[in-house]
Length: 256
Image 1 (cartoon, rainbow, N blue to C red):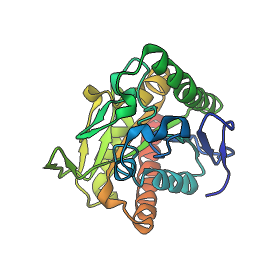
Image 2: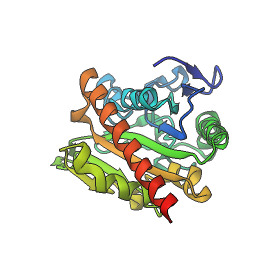
Image 3: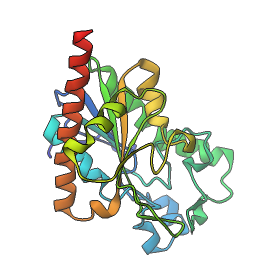
């Protein structure tokens, strides 16, 4: 898992395996809980800064593992989703949320339009531009975004273990769902625990759907990827699952 670099010293965009030869681009928008010093931890408690509110636990190592298995480039955000959620447009209220589930974020309350625009320019624009540049350099690129979610949400247990999410382009998601029994015994569901109606497909919309690129968003319940060993096993599973799904889609297209 070498070849990690920041796109520049101050924009907190992480690029891994920049020389990767796969057509797949792996994306991890919620890879880090890092909050730059000027924001003074957004006034939050230390335990909340480590929680799912601040990032997607386990997602980055899974994304790194898939990148290594498939020789795929990886683009990730190196700042907390609470500073700026790179899977949201600047116009979205939850791009800089004042509350996440039951956790309040004091440093995001009463942000002015200038405050919001400054953060969008510092953190969202470099991430968006780097991802666009990475995708543009690949012939027939495929975009796969990696996320994790909590087993409990507002006190309610979630039975779903892996979510295969899509927006209007269902091609890759359909194939992954069809092949899921071959690759995992997990409870796999379509557009769960979130779907496009919750605003979670922004990256897919901007970087894949408009250009007609195959794409999928993968959500993993984070109790399944708590340890390094679990994360590495999940990366292996998803790599094989993605590969076979793409092979099946390519074969079907060739036969048309």
